Length: 76
Image (cartoon, rainbow, N blue to C red; front, top):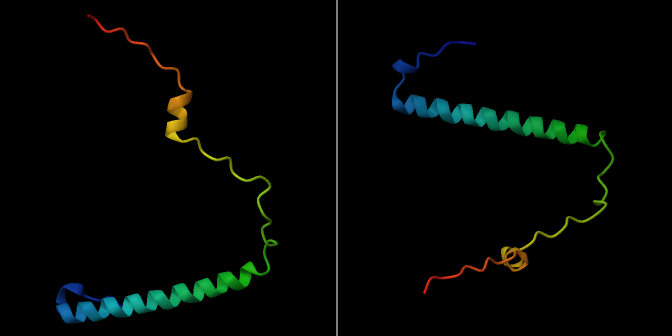
């Protein structure tokens, strides 16, 4: 691969280089995604539904109601 002296390039040349690099990266990413999708067809069987649904989380208001309250005596 040829070395590029970035210090000698103008702003416009650097911007063009960046655009070309981004375009090449997008091309390679798309090719890799297509390859992985093709390979995934031969992989594991499709996932089945979860055996048990996730338990609902307790709300803060429910937790506060369930917690014992401290009786604080105030000085008169």
